[in-house]
Length: 403
Image (cartoon, rainbow, N blue to C red; front, top):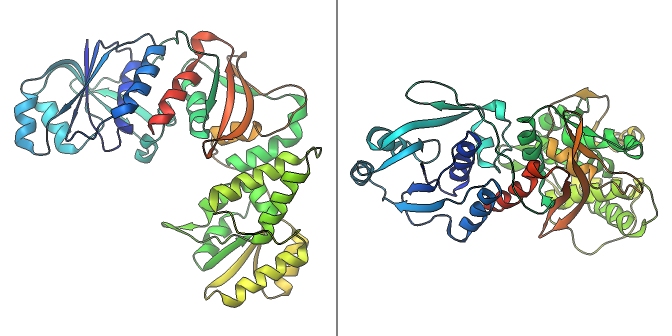
């Protein structure tokens, strides 16, 4: 069987189209990728081959360079004969010429509800946001992941890949997360960082960011994580300045609190700070309410824009307002739409002495969550698959390096 698709700029949507077809039951002996230029998968092809091998497939992957004019595409497509043609990735003219001229048993297109989600690792997009359609009959093609064969049970996944793992398993049944009793005190924090829980008034941060520059207290980085940057972004501009005193406290507590049961909360805050900002220069010392307010007032004196201080500490917020600083004090709780991978990654930061979080499929434990650690400049969470044929974590470990 020959599966054909189109080459995209960075090949992310091309790889996702191939994986979608494999999940739809296609078992290709050859994969053809028609593209404009020679800027293809290159050395990354081995990653795709590794992922497919785990699914029992060893196809020849051919990248066919056609050029960037319609005449060349019409001429070449007339010569092509394949079994399944997926026209999801690539430019519109590539899809149109392939659809009209390739001799294909089936032509398919994956409709994606939110297009931006299609440029992440395969599976990050919830599968109910994707509809694979036969373009000739209009029939929707059902997805059913093939079983995994082989692969080490231990994998190291990014937050996006953890989301993808949850979504892939959801195609197999009902997925849940089981937490040891020791984790229960920290579950709310991870729910906040991942967005499943939100402050009732946190949208004020976004409206205030349109008025000026946001600065935030330590507890906000801990509690909200990188969602703080999402709220403080106006278009492409991040309207969030780092406070030196916040970094001082996070770094100090993270390095000097090895026996502190709440150590992981400061690690989480430091994770968020480093993900959002460049780390400041030489440290100045410990943080206190006085020092943080002093720094806020200093910024206020030399920044032309309005400065807005965000905190979860009501007393500190009152002090800031007393100094004439526009302040948002975060309060209240509401339910929101969250990110599964961020939630699972957060759980991996908990330094639990007993027990580990587990992912359940139809009530059965199928994945054991390990620690979240820094690898190659990004956070990755180690997981152990408990059921071999469900080792999609190892498949995703290959695919995440293609993004």
